[in-house]
Length: 400
Figure (cartoon, rainbow, N blue to C red):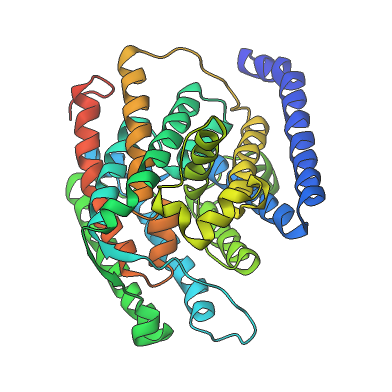
């Protein structure tokens, strides 16, 4: 037996124990949610678990994919994001366009204005400094990374501050919400979305091929006798995650009545904590709106986004244990401390201003036919360019 095999065999009991803990935690939390709320909330929690498994097993994130494209023009991650946007839009547009009678769902349609422009830009910088986006922060934290726990803490603080400032940003003005589905019908809106995505696809492929000899594949093949093993233990091809995330997002739309989102929960948790220790949130206009006010007054277990976030973390932890990648880290450099604190604050503040993160604003926005999702994409990508360069300046990355 070689050394690597021996190490794997020796580590098996520890991994089995970790797997069992996550299975027990997932079952226990789902029963608690069902007992204190209702079956729908428990189902959303389990959908969140599914998202966590998909993200971790494929290591599917926006931050790393965008950084690789910015630094080396490796477009594999970006192409996977384009496929995800296309597939989710294909699934969402007919439902949101009212094709299926009796199926009621609302898209993520938000105003197009300065708050999105500035918020997405700040979020983009925060992605690169903090080392993750909304979903990336949660699934890597589930993997046991200490820096992501700190990023999440300051993400929550930033989102809470952002919710207190949001009314001021709204007063700067906007052009209102623009829904392609409402304005043109779901099929023409879908065709317009596909055309823009196709242009983006050929652009990133052109830039990749101009710098690199060949494209790294998104649709890598798994041999038939390895499919089940890969499905359970990873590592997934990117396209598996694309299909999985799109399908779980469809389940979210059907079950919750809205697309998957992440960062509303962060501002909710922070505001609840601030109010619990005596802080006055009565003057924060955002929390006077009907839905936020209801969420603030109810248990977090009644909040769809919160229970799905809890599920995502535990699902990622289970997947990491199954893959042998659950490995808590405790060492961080001074540069890393600065990056996670500044990055987390920018992520939270930016997400609240921009009506969400890469999931709640970008993916949900574009797949709902909302123009604010496209503005988010453009502004956040520019922010990622700035953030990628800042990583070099503070010593996290080598020059490029």
